Length: 295
Image 1 (cartoon, rainbow, N blue to C red):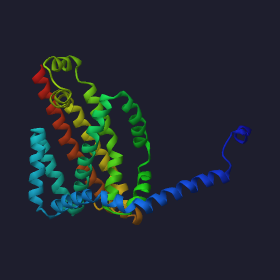
Image 2 (image 1 turned 60 degrees about the horizontal axis):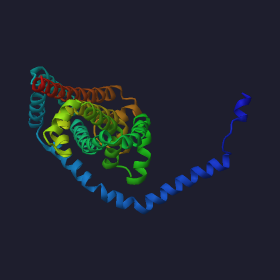
Image 3 (image 1 turned 60 degrees about the vertical axis):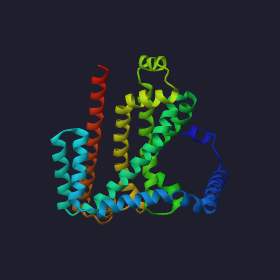
Image 4 (image 1 turned 30 degrees about the vertical axis):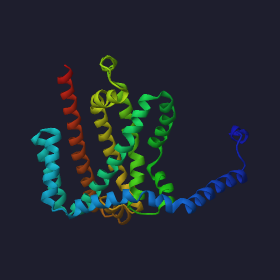
């Protein structure tokens, strides 16, 4: 083990000084700009609260009909619709409806934010190799960083509550949306793009009328992955005040309530299956539609 003593490293005092300097700088930044950042995210908070109010205050039969209608529109399959209805009825029967609706509203808002941010970034990546080289390592870090680590800077900046949890969920779930948008646009057939250019399409027309429609199945796969990753983050985000199915799971872990943890965990799985089936079925329908159109 002599090689360990020969390995060059910073002395303890220098390392401690560096860590303290970084911590103090971040705290100073938080004190100076925390309120401004909080104000910046106020519209996001209003959107989340409005979504949560709608999901929790609307009578459960109406919510069930909306989800079943979405399932039918996306899949055109009665099996998927009946499956959604059974899962939702079981959630209601085991008295987890309100927590589930809070979780669904969080997933809905975080997915919308991820789409609004992810698609433009993915488009920019597909159009610029330099931009892709800059963003790819950042996405690698975002995907490999332990989810708990996201909570530290978010809580220091914004405190504990719904919005910090939402931001942590979005950061964790964003990379697949960006990557698959970039991939989908890059996979568009070059011959089709040349034909669009031959018809005198502008860059904007080519993007909106050719590239994005053809990339839509791949983008929908990105939406599917974003939803799954957002659901995976729900329990972690509950540590900083996000209400929903995650909090009973944490309570069950702390107090060794086996059935509480299992039931709420299964409710999260049920919601994941519903979202997964609906988004996957819609992606497949889009793909078939395009194959018919171009076949």
